[in-house]
Image 1 (cartoon, one colour):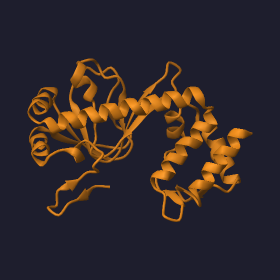
Image 2 (tube, rainbow, N blue to C red; image 1 turned 180 degrees about the horizontal axis):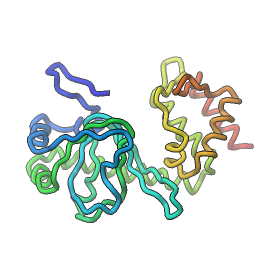
Image 3 (cartoon, rainbow, N blue to C red; image 1 turned 90 degrees about the horizontal axis):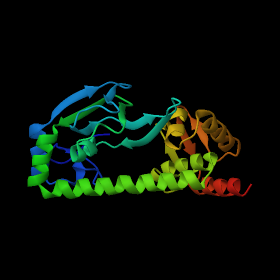
Image 4 (tube, rainbow, N blue to C red; image 1 turned 135 degrees about the horizontal axis):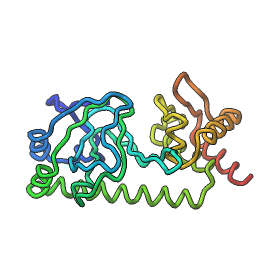
Length: 235
């Protein structure tokens, strides 16, 4: 959800790239970017595309993904409002390493590689913010590869759901995901199939550690979900 500060300027979270920039740097970007709207399901960038622009997600949701040789979707990350995508191509001028898909109606700002490099050279804060973002991506991918080799698919599903619920946990220990990922999306993110996700969510509901609320998911206690995971791992 887009938020505004006292000056009615869009305020992005501090952990996003735009949220870390000085006002002057943000203004420099806004002067050179062009904004485009994308509908849900529309391809924003295509794998192996020979373009080098950097894209900033101003509003909406996009997913970075690829497909295996057998056609299975592999999801790398979901981009937060205020973050960018496509920065790899600016750095190495190689074709796109993944595709980017709008998962809901989105507004995206596009900056050419030449203009972005000029801003990098004259505004040190964006250079440091970009480095932090790249390090964060490396840490996240290292974690996911480690979990893939160390945990079975069912446990990877549990781990990812626990992370999602922890991020929105209430003071009483409960948590609700009003817009949870689809079973297919979650499967792509933890490197498994939709059927495995459906089975595990069914087990959680049977154990009464997870409930469906309309289109959302609710857990009465995230700690209880953690205990459920520990019990299932020892089975």
